[in-house]
Amino acid sequence: MPPLSLQLRTYPELNGKTFLIGVGANKCATSWVYGYLHSLAGVTVSPLKELSFFNVRAGTGPAHDTDLLALKRLVYFIRQEGDPAENLRAGQGFQASVDRVKMSYDENGYFDHFARILTPDSKTLCEITPAYSALGREGFEHMKAFFASQNVTLKLFFIMRDPVDRLWSHLRYRDQNTADLDVLEAWPRMVEDAEFMGWSDYRNTVEALDEVFEKDDVLYLFYENLFSEPSLKALSAFAGAPFAAPESRDAVNETSLKMDLPDAVLKGLSARLGSQYAFCRQRFGADVPASWREVS
Image (cartoon, rainbow, N blue to C red; front, side):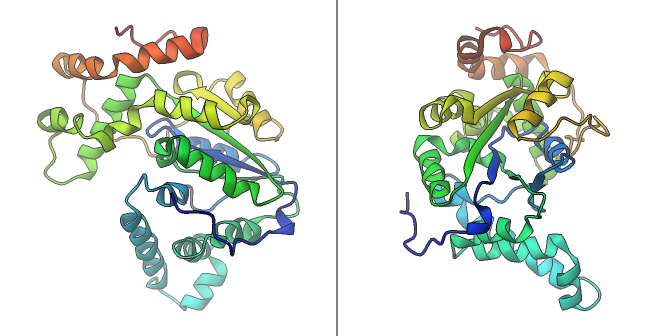
């Protein structure tokens, strides 16, 4: 884990703000939540939902790939029709892409980004990067120390979904976005991939969050009841914003490849994820949705 930079500046304009960081899980409606938080009064979300800043710093993700993606996204904006300078001045996504490239070589770029996008009404600043779920204790400690360099409050939320359903959605998502991948043939190999299966390790994420952060600074939510008024009120209150009913509950960035879960695949995934069900029921008790599978 790299040490914090000695050149890390303080940002008076951020004093008193809350940073709300969504740390996953993948395929648990985080894109929908991003849009919902954007609609709340006093909450300013990054124009880039996933900044992927801390997982690169923690070494839990492919830094080269993530930073290369940031550069490619910037090139995409530069090449759009019209005058690039005018497009930059007018485009929030373009501006945010410039900010993200800076983060590749300057830690200050993270706080620069939020200091730039905040408004007079901003109380809470937000980004959601599901890859953060794999940070582990050391990575979350680094995140905590990073935010402690500023006079801000750090809060995190983590959304869980029935482990088999989440993994099956993730497998289908990989299938629809990967040429020549047949998930029905490839799934036994994919579940042997430690990095891929890290997305399914709720226990690792929850135990690390519980160990590093105070109880009141972490909110755990469940996908199956996420869209209900009680869950959204809890999320709004956690964000320090007044509750507002969502304009739509339609899925965002939903896995488009539809495929029934074959019995053989269900049996194999259940065998791999039995310990996750047991952990969640032990840790969260009656809060675990009744619709979750009974897997031993």
